[in-house]
Length: 292
Image (cartoon, rainbow, N blue to C red; front, side, top):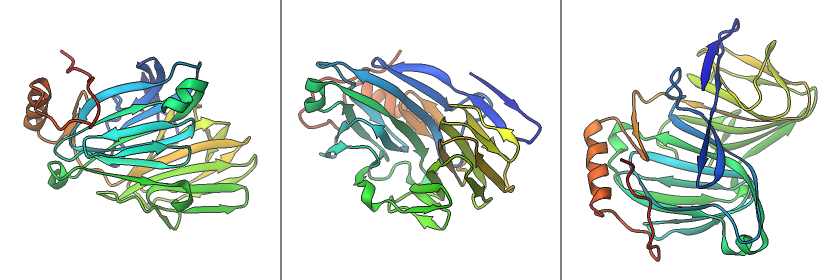
């Protein structure tokens, strides 16, 4: 993991490589130089992976507090189940949105039909911190089909507003604080103005080649934009990006799957999970134990 500032004021973060249950991940957030962007405290790029028949992703029961998770796939499918009783198949272009509040547990796995045939997986999962007043609130889950997400298309630029507001669009996902999360697809030669409508913003280039003003964006790196400045995004070739941002919420502590403004909440959560005093996912018996 590394980060550096360049002449335009961008903070460029190279993600660290991780592996979750055999699935390769790139993780630019959190980093030593940038702990968060708006409410976003965690950013995982689930890298392209082909699973042979009989195999797939399988993440057993694990807990969360103090955050919302948002899963957005480009390829493949995941089955989401949680301690609220949700049991949802998540397909490409859909939003799987879980707010942990004071306590939730969930699993994510390749659905049984795709485990039989084999499958591809590629997508993003982000965590958004909750405002301090909501950290101990009621957990909830919602699923939003691709057809319900607002889009715009003009001059070779396609925008899908995944969550929050931006580009005169508003997502139906109920966020807890001002948020920007947009998927951007630009044809070669297309340009898009990135306004200063949110105090914190960052671009992640998934595929392609693009410039921000005259600065080349790193492929699969996070470019954190200076606040209060507008930029022009230009695609040198067909490009696929996401733009995240919003209102910062203040410092957050992250410990395993727990996020909190108060370290005491994390200690309480660790103790409850260790002692098996946690809501359970119906029908699930296996779980991920607390790291030492």
